[in-house]
Image (cartoon, rainbow, N blue to C red; front, side):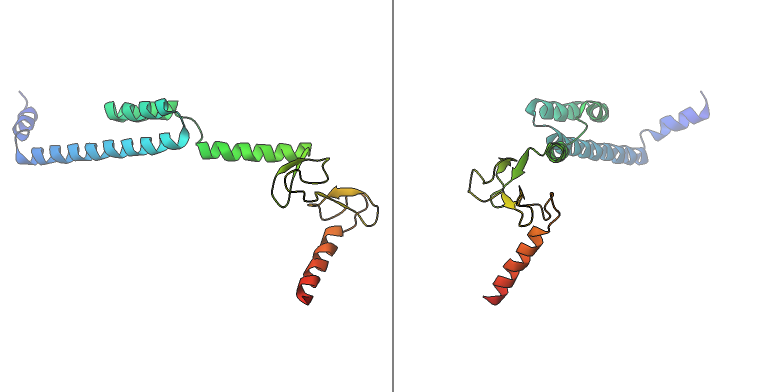
Length: 165
């Protein structure tokens, strides 16, 4: 038998090898615990499905290293919050393109673009231009028909009234 093999067999029962073995096992246990915690947090952020969350956590408890690799393959690509913001952005962009709905400036209730008053609180949704006498939404600062800066003048009047009172 070669001498290096006998040296390895002599090292196995030594105290140094026992310490290294305990350190390796402690490191592996901490790594396993960290993976379980990370997978738990990530699964909760990515899915509402209790089955998916429980399966992901149990997979990583039963199969430590391989479990995290399998989890990375099957997990949803985006968190619930990311999907919510993307849907919100998509809805806002579609709303700008279609321009079918406005929101009340007072109560934020969605209202059809043809409405002159909010169906919830009665707030006026449109104003009439002083120059061309056409109606346009309150949120616009310039009349789209003649270019009159109606909203800015009205704001200055309101500020002037507050200062005098």
